[in-house]
Image 1: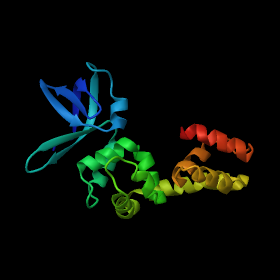
Image 2: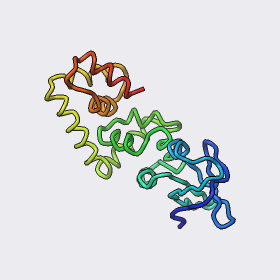
Image 3: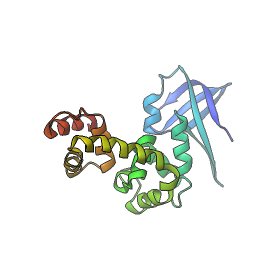
Length: 195
């Protein structure tokens, strides 16, 4: 098992990063989140990796953070979720956003990933809720309770959900706002965090 690669980044595109280590170029399939964090070609880079061995191929997947690697490992334990779907999900959602979606039961947000259908997204929520959701759910609940204390939590979150955002996204955005403002102003401020 190759746990990580460190060396010079010699190539990158939206699907692949090639890291030269000791004269050997390791091609790693990557997520959009990892791509955003990669340095320029020619600079040093460190990636956590997962090696997937099949009958017809050996593939290396690279991740900029350990959290992303751990989320990937959890996703591929779900029945029907293979390496390609897991990469697609982590390209659409950061590890924190994925954990929040699972904790809140927001399968619709997970289904926005390319190639992931509603049934697969529901299976992810069902199978991973106990493994990934506890701490994030309680953090979201505490963020929502702050808004509840100001008397406008339900109103603001309901308005954002009505605009098409998930409850998890709405709660996260509201937790970043100054809750002493009017409901209309909190909604406007929350929308800035959601864009």
